[in-house]
Picture 1 (cartoon, rainbow, N blue to C red):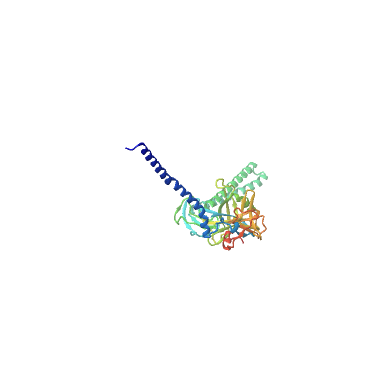
Picture 2 (cartoon, rainbow, N blue to C red):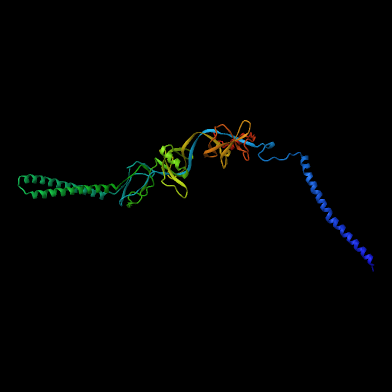
Length: 406
């Protein structure tokens, strides 16, 4: 059995062992981590320096912080102000041919697809009853004319006898009344004759206007009903194109129509046709914000066909000698638009401009004289008077400038 001093010595030895273990487990690793962090911070610059790599520069800048830019020249050119839209070819006139009476069809005088003049005979219906009615009206008119002539002779004779007091005045008055009544009857006969002539004309169906005959829906011998469609005649020349444009172009359209300056072209797959503005609708579509417009084209060569899809372009006016720059060169700020022009010392100078008309990737502007070298790429965060470094990539320059400034 151990004594009290021996037990105390054993306890002190155990406490020393625990303290040593804590020192190894907690103290030394923390020191090692600290040494690693310090060493890592000091080793990184050394390794980069040993590799011989320079520190990277911000994108878009040359060595020393000079911005790298691309230029395009501000040039003068005539700029047409145009509206473009997709349109549909529409005939100026199309008529369904329908008979007014129910009759048997006796003749078809046209073929499907044939071009006919106004008034050309298209169909003939059985007209025997109408001709008989016409002859009856003619005979009635002749009979009443003869009766009128006889009454007029009697009236003249009675006037002579009445003047000699051989007959009474009342007899003369009675004859005068008969003459006037017969004259009215003759007028009625003349009206009946005209009516019979109109009825007969309904059996000869003619083209109301010049155009192309569509599908013929009947055959000789068929009993055609009144108001049944026999065919159609569509005017092909001249012809129209209908399309819609934004309401923002209404003022230019009205002015162009008034002055006659508005020119319209229809783009086909293999040709461009010229026409003229013929119609502007009376109201703007409030839902779509567009207005319907029509143009008229000469179509003697039948290049345009009803229902055909075309791309229409209206030239409202032309800006002669306008200064044109790429849209990419324009910087929009709260106080207005500007571009950066590069002078001979390669310093960027801001120039205030006003956009007059944008088209494609170009814009006509005021505020420039033409010939200035304008920055189109690399103008981000550019300060007035900053020195720039001009790119020598000519191919990219043309592409960035749009390639259409001439």
